[in-house]
Structures are given as structure tokens and as C-alpha cells.
Length: 214
Image (cartoon, rainbow, N blue to C red):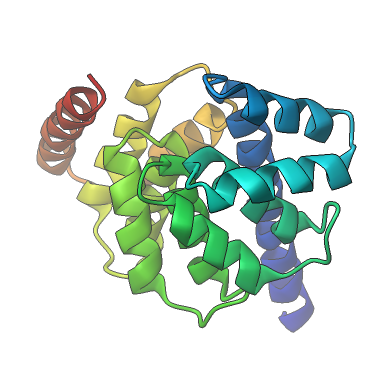
């Protein structure tokens, strides 16, 4: 039984790690190229010239570029061109988090695993909630999981609502199937009246997220 539990935990952690790597990749691909120096850094990153990328992102980060700070944090997270250092990942993502919703998600991720920081689901929740309202579908999904698993508060209505809100945000994302899977599970834990309440809440969340991103 213990080995089975360990296997499940390992699989869960592998899935979370995969999702974070995917987020990093998608975020880099979708960044604005208003700053040509930022594009130079991303070009170097994409061809795995991490030393040049690091030099560019470091310079831009000192100038206050939020996107550069976020990518610099991911380089420390994965040990790309630098020694892996979760404390520096945390530092640069916190610097970036003022304007970058995926940095907020990443901070919540670190606190949810206790990597480089003390395990703290409350901080995970706070960061993911901010990112979720800014439109991060990954954060919306993770909020649903927090409510479903009860790491902060077990609330199946809120879990259902966030899983649905995530699906409304961008149904073409890779994480869509995971949200749909958990939505299908949690609906059997609710009465028809509770499902109606959850759908109403999901509509409110969706409208608020939409208004925040107009």
C-alpha cells in the first residue's frame, strides 16, 4: 500500500513538473516582442544558446523588464545556462509577478510543492487566485484542484466552478482535458441544486475574468 501511494505521489509530481515546463514553453512562445532586445534573448534561448540568452535577460531584468525577469527565473528553475537555483527562481518570479500572470502561477506552484520555499498552500492559493482572475487557465485549474482536494478548504461547488471557468477561458489548451476529467469527477459529488449553483458561480467567474482582460 505504501509503495502504491508513493507511486501515485511520484506520478502526480511528474505531471505537475510537465505542466510547469509546458507553461514555460507556451509563455515564451506567446511573449510580445515590443522590445527587440527581448526578442534577441528569446531567439538565443530557442536555439539553446543559453549563455547569450542569460546575458540579455539579466541586463533587461536589471532595467525592470517583467518578461525578461520571468524567463530568467525559468532558467534558474531548469538549470539552463546557470546552476539550478530555486531561491533565484523565486526571486526573479517575485520581481516579475507585478505584471506577468504566469509568474504568479509559477510562484504558487513553488509554494505548493515546497521547492526552494516552505510548503504553504495558503500562499499557493493567493498567487493562483490572482493569476486566475488575470486569465491564467493553469491557475484556474489548480484552484479547482485545491478546492477539490481540500488543501485549503474542501468545497466541491467552488471546485466545479473553477474547472468550468478554466474551460471557458481557452478550450483549445492542452490542460483542457485535465479540467474536463476533474469536472466529470466532482459533478457526481454534487446534488442537482448544487450543480446549478456551481454553474452560476462559473458564469460570474468567467465574466469577471473576461472583464479583467479587456
